[in-house]
Length: 165
Image (cartoon, rainbow, N blue to C red; front, top):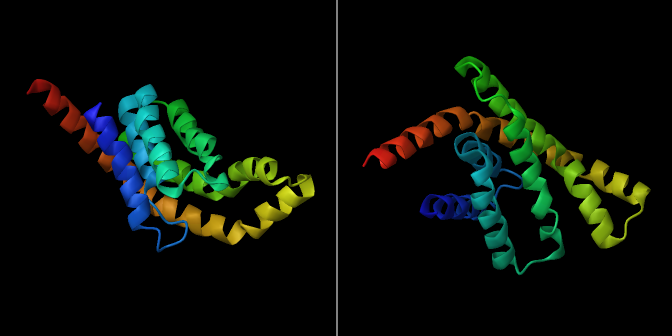
């Protein structure tokens, strides 16, 4: 449980530290790393992050879609084959992270539409207006996604070493 609390707190702290750069963060990388290593249990640090984010911001309306948006990345990572060759993982992990960043606005839009009473056209307009931010988000996530493989390998080694001690 301590590792999960640490990972959730690390996600939150990394987001706060990087808030000066819009839509650039390490969250996708941390979610993918924890999912690759811990599988279903990765939902624990993910929702610790979501809860800490809400607690910090006062649970505003924009927070509600966080309850499902990050879970989509977790679910897609869960669907990836566990026994991919290392070279394939090095390509697939950053691409998945990048795609989640590119689709973040699309995933977020239905929640925003429901919360703010937007009709379908309003939701589409909101998504189109967010395209520049989604492009920035996807580029940042692609770069952060390059860390998924080495970080997941490191975390797996540390967890194995911790179990031996």
